[in-house]
Image (cartoon, rainbow, N blue to C red; front, side):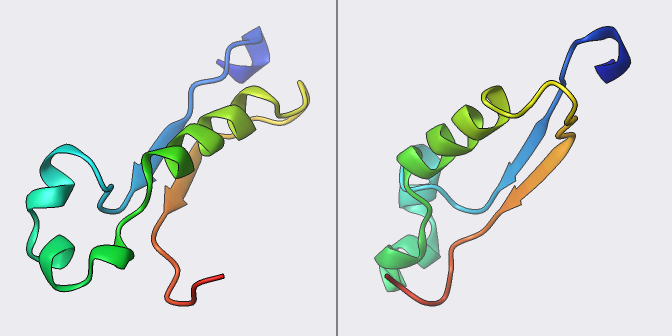
Amino acid sequence: MCDDGVTVSTISAGLVNSGAGRLSPAAHSHPGSLLRPADIARTVDFIIDSPANVCLTEIVLRPATRHT
């Protein structure tokens, strides 16, 4: 659909610190290992702000093992 000016993107995210993600065993043992809802929102902004000649079809997000 990109050739028709429509971008369809899939965001495959790891556990997010909201909803069911908070109930996961990982959330209880390593609460800092979950993605933040803001991480997902920034990714959506990145897709929306991408140049017209770029077709972002899939983005995979996972928590980094390093923390900044």
